[in-house]
Image (cartoon, rainbow, N blue to C red; front, side):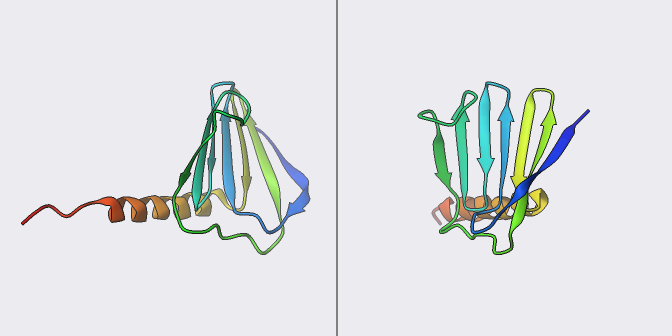
Length: 105
């Protein structure tokens, strides 16, 4: 059974994001402009950052951070997760499309 809760603090001026922490193994922070990956239960020296887009776009309206706790998985998100994943997917697609080199004629 999933345990959900919502922060009482409203966050403004930050980028929408989804953070997944898979036990003590790995963590992933997905944002429309960047992707953060780290090994272990805490972010630190093992963190890697992949830039997906030019500059972060921040949320203008204040929003609460939401949390979902599942066995072995902690999820927190700011903004609608479906929109966040859609924007990040678009950024990945654009980055891959721009990296593809046309075959020689």
